[in-house]
Length: 439
Image 1 (cartoon, rainbow, N blue to C red):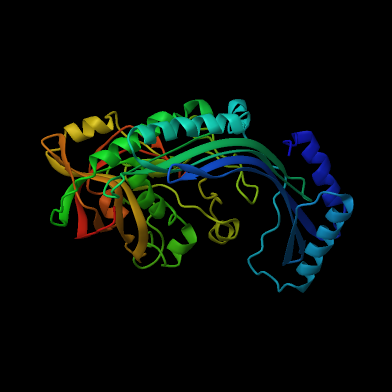
Image 2 (image 1 turned 30 degrees about the vertical axis):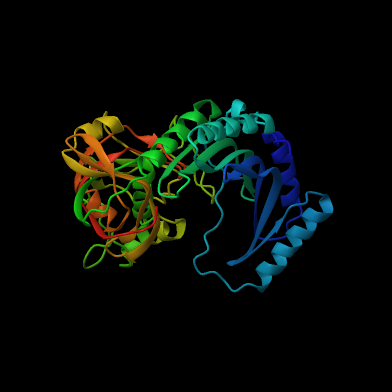
């Protein structure tokens, strides 16, 4: 599939709308070309590419809404899709919370598309994975990894005159390396819009060192420890917390951001002063879409400022009901950090535990944001600023809210493969409840 230009998309979507007989009609189109190599036991298991285009049509009669999705763009297929969406809308019950579609909006020019990433071909993927496998072979390690690149476009148009268009690229790589006896494991993951920033060899070498260094893990007593969470470990808990930044659930008393007696905790101190989290579609290291799924423009939004809750997201319906600005949910989050490298954080730790990754995380209590899960793929004991020995993995019970109130120091933020910039962080009194035999 060739990426459709802005002009080509406009012509196509206007044609779709010309078939509509509904009160309102909205069309979304997404097209992607992706390629990947997956390997396990140090051998390639799959390699391929996928090209697809999806056209979604939403038709509205009054407050009755129906939608249809097609992947064929002939005139006959488009008209069938429009008719199907209208039939479903006529059959649907009224949606009492339906909001009229938006009119024309102003959007920033997206920075998500990088030509070098769009030019990735099977030869480039093969060369990258060959380098990764060479490092695994040299260390006599078993490798399981996934290299994936995507190039695409997305656009929306509605009968009120709104039109939005973006192009994007992304490349991601993750790898797990295991020692032959299965006692040592290491992990690394990277993701970027620009392939020039992806160093597969460096990521593989990091995972290889963790695997070989973790082979003689000792059991130590669970309890409360100072921990250093690497970005791939910290991001899982922080993302879960940020998913709760929804105003309606807070207003209705269903959230950790609900205020006793009613209302939300906007304006209240939630976590340590060191914590500032925001979203910004134009952030150079992690640009994102410039518009939300319902057409609202995305702009820089500070969610937590020096520990204080500054904003929650509002659906258009809930914002209208409350008489406030309808702030869309974030598409990508940036957590500010410090100037220390991971090595410097370790050097400044008297006693603690270095955690590479958290896994199998489950919610225990949504109201307090308490989660449980396991460490894995490289857990090490630190003493007097040095890694002394690998330790067996733990089960933890911890809340990101409590965790971010026990912050000791933050390092330099890094992009994770979860669409978030997160610093490594040293945290006091992190709770490990039991040992795990998982590696």
